Amino acid sequence: MEAETITERDAQDGGAKRRQVMDGARAAFLNAGFDGASMNDIARAAGVSKGTLYAYFDSKEQLFEALIREDKEQQAERLCAFPMEGGEPAELLSEFGRRLIEMILRPESVAQVRVVIAATARFPQLGRAFYEAGPAYGIRRLSEQLEAMSKRGALSVANPAIAARQFINLCCAEFSKQVLFGVMETPSQEAIEANVDQAVAMFLKVYGPARAAE
Image (cartoon, rainbow, N blue to C red):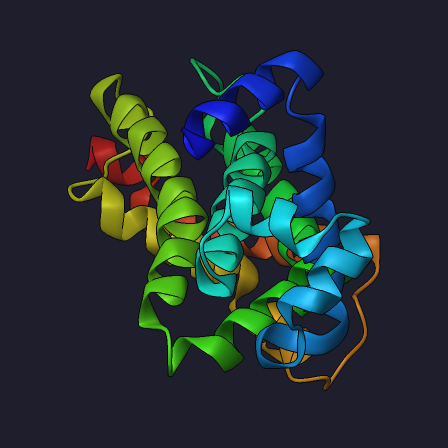
């Protein structure tokens, strides 16, 4: 009955109450981390009662996992929210790479990764949820485009999934590690674009149309 009540309530307010809970949870987790944020803290940040909180989620772990999945799915959709069909490989890869770096280096994205890493040792399902909803989605979407470009002769990629991971690592590995561990601040737009240009050039040397013609 409770589930039906919540469903009806969400339908009536367009999901506004659940959004209020999720926004409060996001603020609490980013402020105090997974272990530091209690359900009381989350309820306070969301401006709801603990009863309302538990009506939507049975536990803090369930709430955090739902938040991770929602955030990463939205980020992944934004990452691919540009025409990806039929374009030139260099243009598509450059746009994808730039969007990817800008997305993962946003302060709130970096903070979320730190929270997930800290929680994953005790709750491995949280790490899996983060990976499946975010990185794995991006790899899958990019690999689909690499396969399509290979079929029309614009690239020569035998294993699109591996190639997608390689390109993403070329774009992000160094910047993401340094920012994640506090070694550097968010790089400038010029540095991001230069890094993406280098990644695209290296990728096309291996998988580009010149090799397809060899």
